[in-house]
Structures are given as structure tokens and as C-alpha cells.
Image (cartoon, rainbow, N blue to C red; front, side, top):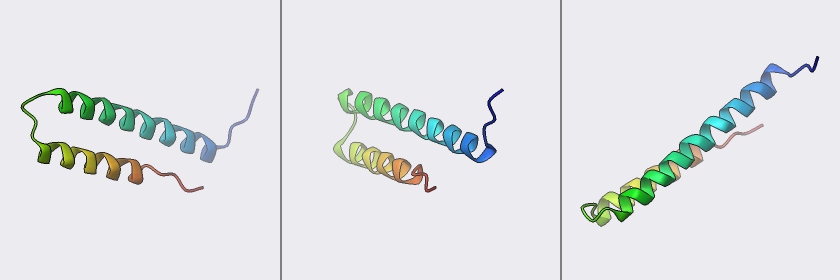
Length: 61
């Protein structure tokens, strides 16, 4: 049986979660940019939030 340290497991789970959140926000941003009702300000706000989410998800080991 393979032993996995709890820290490694936690870091890998956080990384997977952050990547899934980032992917979801990218898809949401693309679909929002395609919609004609979305204004430039809303798009820039969404892109700023996406950048903040990715920065927030950086894992320091």
C-alpha cells in the first residue's frame, strides 16, 4: 500500500480545486464576452476578478 502524506494530499486537492475554479471562470468570461448585452465595464470587472482568483489560488510550498 502506498503511503501519501496528508500535506501532499491537501496541496494536491487545493491545486485541483483552484484549477477547476479558474477553468470555470475562464469559460464564464468567454461566454460573457460573447453575449452582446455585456458591457465593457462588466467584462473588465470579470477579468479583474478572474485575475484575483488565480492569484488567490497560488500555492506556496
